[in-house]
Image (cartoon, rainbow, N blue to C red):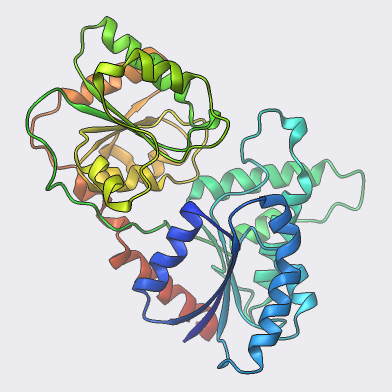
Amino acid sequence: MRILALQPYDATSHRAFLSGWVRNSRHDFEVFTLPGRHFKWRMRQAPIDFAQRIDAAAATALPWDALWCTSMLDLATLRGLSSTVHGLPAVVYFHENQLTYPTRHEKQRDIHFGWSNMTTALAAIASHRRGGRGCVWWNSAYNRDSFLDALDGLIKSMPDEQPENIAERIRQHSAVHYPGIDPVGQSDKPMDGPPVLLWAARWEYDKGPDLFFEALEVLEERNVDFRLSVVGQQFAEQPKCFNEAKERFADRIVRWGYQPDKNDYRQALSEADVVVSTSKHEFFGIAIAEAVSAGCVPVLPDALAYPEAWGEAALYHDQTAESVADAIGRAIALPAGRDVSSSANRFAWSRVASQMDDATEALVSGA
């Protein structure tokens, strides 16, 4: 089967997802991408750009059997602009959604983008002969439920002519497909010295770095010995707590900052003992899955997508510094040599890719 894959925001986790599926799939892909920056312009521009490229390629390309895209694409507009994909069965993947993605202030939210998420889902459903059951894919049930609950509220806020049963219709045609990972392994984990605590996330306020560093101060007050690795994507502007923490914990630091080389990043995961999230939002958490596959004990918020993804394999906290420190302490106290990496096996691309291949085939065949 030939799949036309459209990636309007080709960056970080979006890129890793599509490249991982393409690399492990039994199907053939033709991939069109746009750079992963200026996401608001990408969501508006992508249908025009892709329509031109698709119609030009259709003259010489072999026929496509299905279209796959992310929710960053306005699929309804694309179908109106390109006759080539107008009737092509489509699947849309939600890495995130624009109705519950965090903003500093709710007044900053542009509901146009959430509305575009909705029409994209409806366009995918309409593209299948039997209604497209399972053609709207989510990276977690939490992502699905948070979006559909918010969509219900948005529709109810309309002054009149409210469309009926939209959220329920999308829910009926939804499926959860967790992202895949390439398991890291534990071969490089050191056996001596204080435990290494790992924080691996974007250096932004919504990932809760201030809470993490507050918890480390609590650990110091309790005389808990540890080392520290803080990695992840950095930006020109970042929370001040990072510079403060770098000075405060200087004698404990193993690694600090973005690891541009993939092998260095995987090494950072392998040498850590505990991976900690203090995120204020998470629709899945690929970095956590990769760290667990490297043998890190996960310490996570008892909220968001984490309980769904990790169940009893993780230790949880309630988003207070004392609770985070308590959970880290419990993780450190676990018996040496305890293997937690097996809990990440179900996210390995060797399993996930075939599941998505099967689901796409079923949709195209109408099974």
